[in-house]
Length: 93
Image 1 (tube, helix red, strand yellow):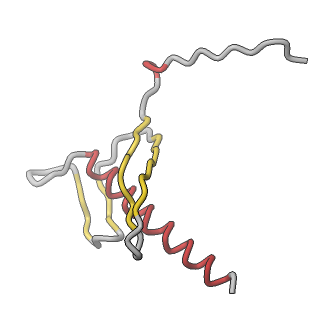
Image 2 (cartoon, rainbow, N blue to C red; image 1 turned 90 degrees about the vertical axis):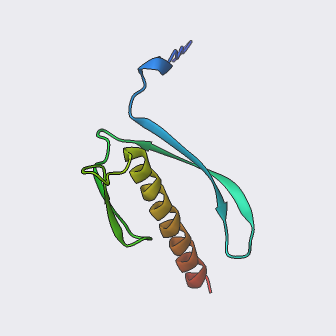
């Protein structure tokens, strides 16, 4: 039996936790706020965007900020979720 429970997280000790805030707009024009969270061990250096069909890197003269790569990951995730929802709707018929 638990008589008491105390939780005092050390917020300043949290590392590798990234939040992405944005606005999602559906095909019918409805929009709503979104919030994605990533916990990563290493900052990304290379990413292939499924939506843009391009490879992005943080290396070299034309390198991107690693936070841009996280944005691309979130963008691809949202597209994948839309397709999964469309598949579920198709299966419900």
